[in-house]
Structure formats: C-alpha cells, structure tokens
Amino acid sequence: MSLFWGLLQAGLFQLDPERAHRLSIALLKAAPAPILAKIAGHGQKHGQADDPSLAIDFDRIGLHFKNPVGLAAGYDKDAEALPALSALGFGFVECGSLTPRPQAGNTRPRLFRLAKDRAVINRMGFNNQGHEAALARIEKARRQKIAPLGINLGANKDSPDRIGDYESGIRLFGGVADYFAVNISSPNTPGLRDLQQGDALPALLARLVAARDLYARPKDRPPVPIFLKIAPDLSPDARLMIAQIACERGIEGLIISNTTITRPAHLRDDAKDEAGGLSGAPLKDLSAEILADFYRLSGGRLILIGVGA
Ligand SMILES: Cc1cc2nc3c(=O)[nH]c(=O)nc-3n(C[C@H](O)[C@H](O)[C@H](O)COP(=O)(O)O)c2cc1C
Image (tube, rainbow, N blue to C red; front, side, top):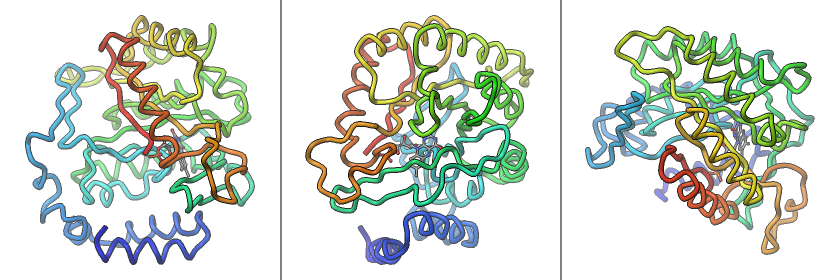
C-alpha cells in the first residue's frame, strides 16, 4: 500500500466506522476526477490506463468492462459518488441496495470493524434515500463518462409486496442501468433471504424478467441483464435449485456472494459476536468455494461475478 493510502486508512480508522464511511464519500464527492485518477495511479484520463488484455466483453448482453475489478454494493448506496468512483479506475460500479421508499435502516451502532481479522460486520438494514433520489443523481452522473453501472435493488422492510419492490426498480431504472443486481441475500432485512427458496424464487424471477423485457430499449441494445445476488450460507440443495431456476428463467448471472451469518472459529476480534453479516478476509474462501460450485452447477451457462475478500 502506498504511503498516501496507508495514511488515509490510518486516519479513517481513528473514526467510528460509519462516520469514516460517510467522510470518505464526502471526500470523493469533493475531489476533482483528474486528481482522483492520478492518486489512484489510473492515468490522466479515466479509462485509458487499463491494459486491453484486462477487458471483459459480454457482447451478447451488451456489457463491456475495461477491467474485471468492480465496486460491490453497499459502499455508494445512494449513487452519490459515481463519477469519482469511476475515476478511481473501477471496471464497473454498483450502487445500492436501493428500496422504493427511503429507509433509515437499523439503529446505530450497526457497522463494526474487526481489525484483527481484516473483516467487517454490518447490520445496516438497507439504509438508503430511496429510488427517486438515486435516479436523479444517476441521470446527472450519466451525462459524464462513468464506468458501467450496476443498480442493486432491495425491498423495503415493511413492504407488503417485496417482489413488487424489485419490479418497480426494474421499471424505474431500465433506462439508466447497465445491469441489475437483485439482492435477496441481505441478512439484515428479516425474511428477505426466503426469496432464495422454494416457490418464491421462480415467482420472483418470472416477474422480474417480464418487467425487464417490457422496457423498450433502443434496438441496438439487448435487455438490461439481471444478476441475482446470493448468500454464501446456502445448503447444497439450495445451490442446485438456484442454479437450475436461474438458467431456466433466463437471467444472465449471479453475484456470489453477500455477507455471511456464520462466524468462523478463527475470528479473534472482540466484535466478532455482533449480529449481522460478516465480510472481508474471513469470507474469501467461503465465497470462492460457492463461486466454484455454481460454475459447476450451471455448466458455465451463467455469468458469475465473485465478491468477498
Ligand atoms: C457496510 C456494508 C454494507 C453493505 N450493503 C450492501 C447492500 O446494500 N447491498 C448488497 O447487495 N450488499 C451489501 N453489502 C455486501 C457487499 O456488497 C459484499 O457482498 C460483501 O461485503 C462481501 O464482499 P467484501 O468481503 O469484499 O466486502 C454490504 C457490505 C458492507 C460491509
């Protein structure tokens, strides 16, 4: 890590984690894009520093990444810093999770650093400013050059029709999303993970694909790809069922994985028993194992985006 990034991290680690997160977003919004690109060692102009061999082209679904390293959902939930994050050099950026109505999320503290384990536990609970606020920002960001944009959709905690919440996101953001990430794996919204199971999943995917296909895109652009974001805590049977249904229902891929509700025995930090989802170094092997399993189960027919390090 360079001296600059080391000092920045040391400074942010002096603050409460959620304040540090907010401060980092504020700094990104304030910093001019060329300076960010330079600090990140990503050349003078965004997008010109990547070696062409790093590019990933999914021509069939109209997705083109200049490099394979994207930013996962949860950092820029409300799409506040898309041009800045693009200038840092990410190959793609995912905002959200976004719910139709604004939501405060769980009470604080709800984000915990496990410094000894190079990990984080969060129980944020889909705190976000809602669809309309994000749409206005995304439309503005779209007037500049930004990295391919994933819009990660969630459901309001008190929604009477959670599938309807995802559907409304697909309808609203159809013109500005490069792909959709359908997050049914957050452990912090009670019952949400049930959408990964039984009859719920085919019903969800049927409605989402239908909503997506109704959106009239220009003739040269295929329908917006849909990726399902899944949990790492799935039984072998559940994995098989998800792979089969995802292939049958015609979604493009999976994002593997969200945070885990398990706690590996080797965790050392005092915060290890906080409730919520664990991410970071202790998730790496688990998410890599599930990723490999889904490649096998889907016979390579689904695009898989790996998350968890
Ligand atoms: C504070 C925090 C908030 C998150 N919020 C979301 C979210 O809103 N939607 C989502 O799909 N994933 C969310 N995630 C999960 C991340 O996108 C990612 O799947 C997970 O952290 C594992 O990756 P990592 O180990 O590289 O952090 C969140 C993670 C953290 C730490």
